[in-house]
Image (tube, rainbow, N blue to C red; front, top):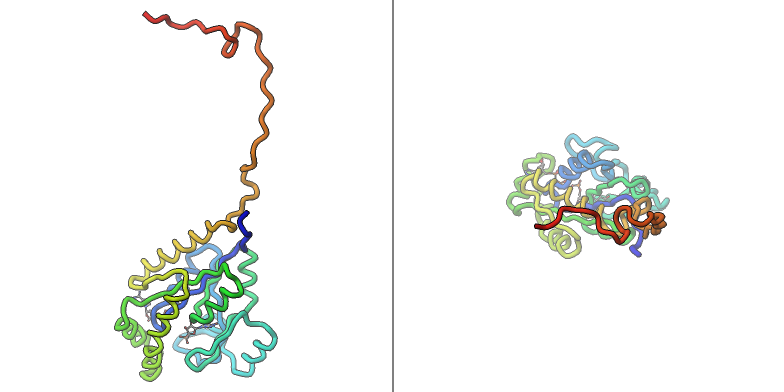
Length: 233
Ligand code: ADP
Ligand code: 5GP
């Protein structure tokens, strides 16, 4: 028998900063039934038009450490000098209810989630090139030159780690095409053995019906007497 999997799906999206994983994650959760974005907790400063509680829960370091102590986080990591963590509640609720929860997370975070839930799906998103990655970081207009330089320096290592550890790879050249590929991954994962609900499907061997009572001789089929038909010439 196949092992029973949770009804819900955990989908971790990782990529070097600037690749477009937040863009993809947001579109995906709005287009997929039961889709939900996992809003992480972070100690970094708010960027551009980011909203507290929507893009991140912005907290100070003391609050973050308290959450770790209380066991409120599924995983946490220090990325680019700031703390980031995944709250436990929404992921557990999505797993139980059959939803799809999408994490915008770094590679170490994705791997931690897969250690906790081996059925979690890890997708690494690649930029079409490093040059385009840098162009996107600049065009986002939210980071200074120093931050962009730091992010470009770590991009190669992140790509290496992601390609070594992740289940799927999606190149984000055209957003629409990348989204089709992400949707296809979700469809395939929904069909994974152990996740398809079999109860209610009439698949058990049917009991043989009782044979109908035999007709009296000479009437109809099965009586041994051929019906009258057209004779062959
Ligand atoms: P990440 O979450 O990976 O750091 P973002 O989603 O913030 O990246 O995207 C970085 C920038 O690149 C944004 O300005 C976004 O609009 C843009 N972008 C995302 N995907 C594409 C794409 N396929 N083609 C061109 N620009 C993109
Ligand atoms: P940014 O500051 O660009 O929003 O995110 C920086 C990096 O932190 C990205 O790679 C992002 O995916 C990652 N990140 C965001 N939230 C979490 C989280 O909850 N846990 C971990 N491990 N990484 C996160």
